[in-house]
Length: 184
Image (tube, rainbow, N blue to C red; front, side, top):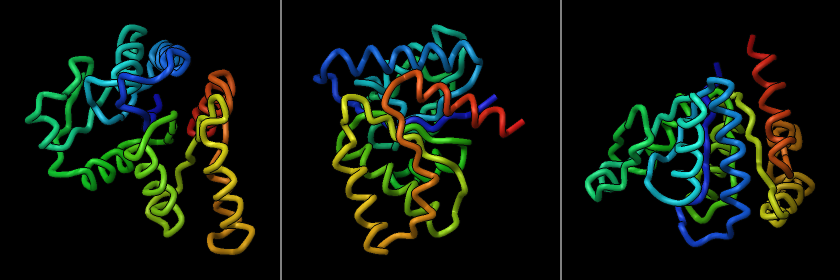
């Protein structure tokens, strides 16, 4: 079974379409008996995916910095809550525990996690793919920027192959199935 690292919004004020697609993905992950390794908070898409993974029979591992734990932001849907000293240790723990990463739409924290995983992979800390869920063209400016950095040789063009852009839940699921099969 896969451990899927999930990066996503902790905002409760986003459009319902983002919750709908996140719920569908979470339900599929749970039905497959996969696990998620995620930010572990009670808010936004984080809470939505954990709730749907759990409801469908999967496992949720929340990774939460001490300061957020003390603020009582830990999700009740997490089967396990790993407490870290800070955000950097949180990213390291998710990177260590996950087999593959999925970046759903999100804010500054999600962008930080995406770039952390991309940079760590580029210098050799891991060889795991990142699925960039470009729902509603959310990540189109970022995709263009990554292409530009590769085009102008600021980043190796071959590293782009580990960033897999998916535009729908079905595409995301298809890529996760491919990855799961390759891990057998």
